[in-house]
Image 1 (tube, rainbow, N blue to C red):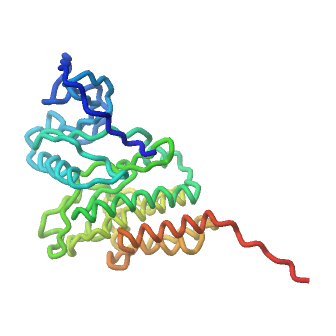
Image 2: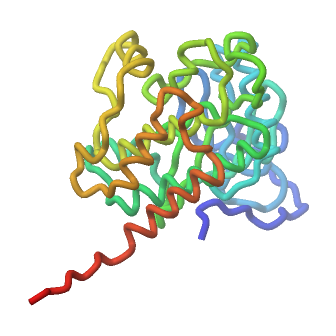
Image 3: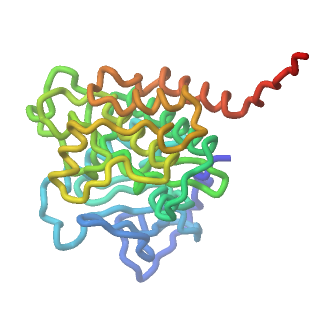
Length: 302
């Protein structure tokens, strides 16, 4: 069962509260915050609905006048309204430049789970990556690139259902213009940004999300970061030119098919990466089946 659920239509009776109201939404306790945004529990301000099953994202008060932040919220609302997938958090309401409302997703962020420093079981790692690849395929089919695939933006439910959140850096796919020409965002986390989003010389293709997912899969398998550099300049140089280590050199029981797939996902040239759609989903599913298959029995020859 998916961890994302929409409740039945709300009753018509009106309910008010002394809490801050954003139009039709009643705002509750804060769920989290970042550099520029805050996320609050929310519920409809009309009807008898009592559960805080929604999340309202808005700009921090000190940045309310920042035009680019308002544009990010607008882009998130636009992308979220066009993308429908059980692995992408849906945007169900918005006010331009002010807030977006999403279904609240229950679980832990992948960054919280990875912070333990323990690698995932291989089957769970590949299953998680395959779910995210399915969600990204829907993003790309809708004409968007997610642009910020990272552990902080992935929530795993208790049953292992993976949901990708935060479409604030989503970009329209444009195959004709390099990133520098169309002023795309580069404020994602450096450790997960593909080389082409750091060089400003080539169009950003859907394969950009493949690279970011490859970094995450590498971390899930090995329990360590792809590159151990700590300064911004060193991380950028590593992303641009340093070859990623093979996962099999770090985890001996990784099958060759998975080792090869991760290496392809982390290729510096985006055109050498597997398509982040059906081909990637099928490749991950094939590895899942391989991991579930029993080892062949050895016959004794007299």
